[in-house]
Length: 185
Image 1 (cartoon, rainbow, N blue to C red):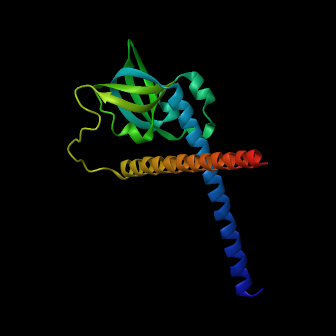
Image 2: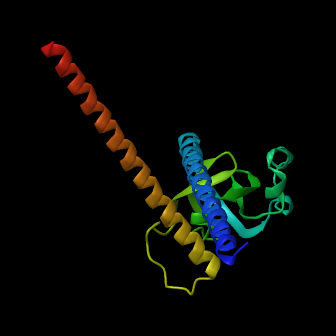
Image 3: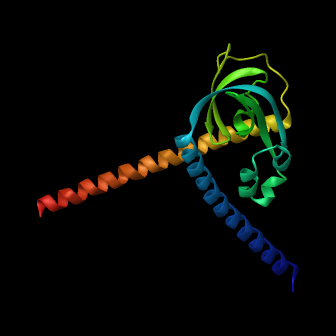
């Protein structure tokens, strides 16, 4: 075989793989957005005293046994943001959203939205405002990546909502045209 045919076959295979990854990625993003909406719907406001926060392996985090049994095997060795907090009279370990992990202060009382054992959103920090700028610190690569990921996810969510609104408007316009046709007939 000539080198051109080999190169062409390799290019076709690579393009096929990239298309498959693109389609798979879109499906996974839509699924993640649906899960986040469900979590927001079931979230409750809770006041807690944050004792410590770390990024550690799920199996070393000291989470309840039921959570560890339900977690897929690949996530048990994955590092996740864990917050140790005193909620009421109990001290418990909670899993935190990557986007807000850097914003949670330690040894401070915080009002957050909690869905099960997952912290989804910070509402207020006692003594500080949530959006109050602090002194600028040098951020690590992981912090920069988490911030960029949350920004891109928010942008994707806005685009999806705009697409759905546009589709709904188009469907509504189509119904009006069909009604107009029925009236004239």
